[in-house]
Amino acid sequence: MRLDPLLRALADPTRLRIMRLLANMELAVGELAQVLGQSQPRVSRHIRILCDAGLAERRKEGSWVFLRAAIGEQRAPPLGAAAARLLALGERDDAAFAARCAEDRRHLAAIRAARESTAAGYFARHAEEWDDLRVLHSPDAPVEQALAEALGPGELGSLLDIGTGTGRIAELFAPRAGHVTALDKSPEMLRIARARLQHLPAERVDLVQGDFAALPFAAASFDTVLFHQVLHYAQEPEAALAEAARVARPGARLAIVDFAAHDREELRERHAHARLGFSDEQMLSLLSEAGFAAQTPAALPGRELTVKIWTAIRSADTAAERTREKAVQP
Image (cartoon, rainbow, N blue to C red; front, side, top):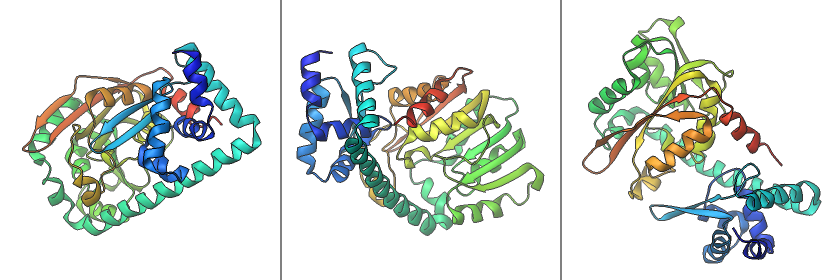
């Protein structure tokens, strides 16, 4: 990293705003254009300058491009860490800049809330046919068998099924769990899951309405955490995994069933997908940052999409705590 291009890249109010938005999350270029109120080509020019200076990194996903910060206060290189500290101090001590950044974050929250409302409507409309829709992408039986093998033969302890949908996965693994908590944001999905799970002893099953980005549970509550075909609905998968790490006990098992990275753009519009699957590199980075030690993933190729199963163990270190501290920095 060189000083001259870094300083030139930061010598623009729009690029300063972009860097503060990126300080806590990865954003799509289209989201940045909406927040900044500028055309996408103009925002793309700002992004090129930031990337050329080593301040930001691009990642292509289908026809979308996502951007993330390449610097951080605790990350190398030292010049990048110094720039990150300067930006944070600037927002803390410059009242006008702080107000502009706060307004940008409010605007972003409104954009994402509108998308979440659209997704909630989709789930409400399709709750009754959810199991049928899911197998359009991949057959259930081989995926569920592979998931069982990935989790190993032992007991699962206290199990959290995040985004339980119709309760199929909660029902499948209930015999191996001491207690099952099935969480979903959609009341319609929970109504169906409740009917599906009603044969299980009431004291061994809880159905909870909640958001995977703000889990309503105490820290270190679960021995096993599952995301079955749900993480691709997350606008911020890193936030969902940080929450999973928070509620997982040290040594807890995590399993994520989702699609490998693909280019099926119609899934965004027709089925409310926020992410077009995940590459191994991306998922392993997300897991590590959240505080999980990843294991070897499994792949189940289908006719059009490949399903991946990523497993990991909750580390005893403070990686997830560092992630959450970063999220609340000014």
